[in-house]
Image 1 (cartoon, rainbow, N blue to C red):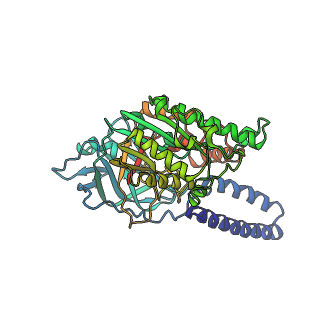
Image 2 (image 1 turned 135 degrees about the vertical axis):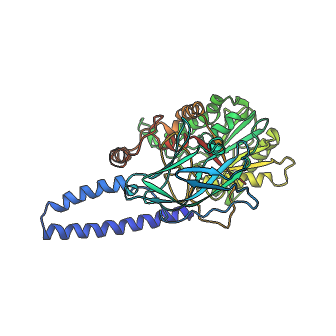
Image 3 (image 1 turned 30 degrees about the horizontal axis):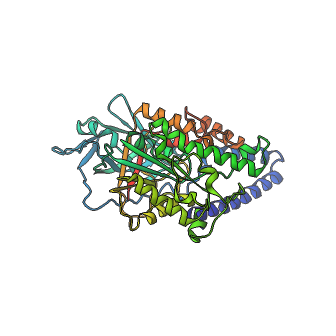
Length: 467
């Protein structure tokens, strides 16, 4: 069982115990006071839960984030005075550096009900970076887009529904070079490349998009069209296979550099456990990957028999790595992103590179899912991305933040809108919850779409980690 599954199991157990306790109290009130009082309190309690306590947060907001950065990382001296962040005299920042500011943030009482945030201002394009309700601990702001303002002494920090405490600490990280680089983005599913790295791969001189699975499961939306489970899964897989090779062209990636490997969703771990044994689709009644590989621009080793095995996956990846010879590979982070297909995608690439005659110069990790906080990145679409919760100081983390201009953000949103998996309407309960949160908790829906990834992924920055 993964760490996230363990956290979810504990969360659900605690929730059931809380509901049992609340029900007992309501019954006692109904007997002792009035029969209608439990009904009113139950409705009010449910509304309060949906507004303020429905987030999946598997740590205390009072916990300090615990980052360590690589030895010899630059630490320019800064001070925060009257809301203005200033560099010490003579300090010069590198152009385009990733700038991370550690600061203690303490929520006000209102910040327990409305998301606390820090405003970064100094020119016409103010940024907002949001944190957990009730936050009271060390957090890490992303100042990467604001280096020029910081150098001029014009960067202002202001807490909304929170206070900024203690002495700030700044780190500066030199960014990798994107220009004139061959970049390969590894996507476990269609849309992972766009969610994590649309801005990055759209700026690269040469980009390859390699999608490992067809993403055919959880096809309830297509069953509503009158299809049975197998037909629905196959249709969804074909559509997502199309998305994976067609949508990158919106960013200028030619068709011959977009590849769909067609392995089956949530089966990569089983493939890895028995490398030579085929693992059929859970829902599509398929044991041949070639249905989802028909749009590829060239043949790969796995096309010989279509067997969904780990050995075929490694052979496909090695063939692609030698053909593309990427200088930079962008792939799921091995510890931040707990999705089992994402973990296996990372491990497959690392294994495929072993002993290969071509080796990349840069590996960048991304996280589209988190162990500890399902809402991260917190805040609204278009806002900045602060560092995510992290509680393992034994593992040094080396961030890279890529700014996205408003035009790039809109293009990224349109690319996500083309993805069939992000188009169906959310369940009624989720839409109702979001309506309550907009009304009572001040949260906003993304203007680009209803799916939560339009809020999470369309931001001022894309955040990566050197591996």
